[in-house]
Length: 153
Image (cartoon, helix red, strand yellow):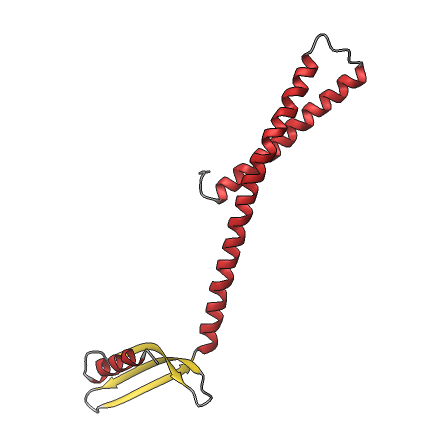
C-alpha cells in the first residue's frame, strides 16, 4: 500500500544506526486480500547486528477508533442542531408571548373595561403564567447561547 515508503524509511533508520528502537504503524496486505494495520516495535543491536521486531495486529483498534470519531461527529452535529433549534424556537415563541403579556397588562389597566372580579383574576393568571413561560423560554435561550459558546458564565 501507500505506506510502503514509510516502512522502508523506519527500517533504514533502524538498520542504519540512526535509532536504537522504532515504533510505527503500517498496513499489510493479508492472504485474505484485506489490509490489516500492524503496530511495530523494533530494536537493533549494532554490535551483534541483530534485529528484534514485534508486530501486533491493531486493525480492530483502528476500526473502533474510526467508529468513535464518526459517532462523536454525529453527536456534535446533533447537539448543534438542537442548540440551533432551541435558539430559533425561543425567539419565535418570545415575540408573540411578549404581545400576549403586553395586551394582558393593557386590559388589566384599562379603567373603562367592564371586567368582573373573575375576569380580572383570569387576566392576572394569563399575565403571571405568561411571565413565567417567558422566563422559561429566556432560560432555554441562555442555555443554547452557553452551549454555542456565545455567553460566558
